[in-house]
Image 1: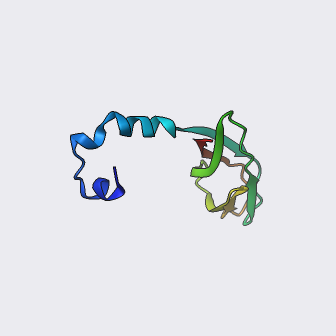
Image 2: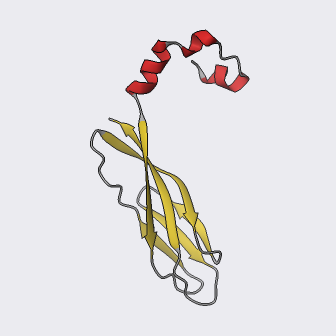
Length: 106
């Protein structure tokens, strides 16, 4: 099945054969939900390190979603090595950063 078929909605029953099913099963993916927390000083940014845990038979692709649980903090950026949070408050806060990692079968 091509991305064009998905985009224009012309997926037919023949597209959903056992061949497609075996292709999907041959390359499954898994997610791992993790979090990091710590104090962020007033009006500063802090990077929370991301260390993907090993998952046997899978390779980590990277971060696919991030949530910061403190309304005074903002997600500034995220890379493969860390998530940077900006504290826009006039005092220190301690947010928890929740993130999801995507792994594909290797």
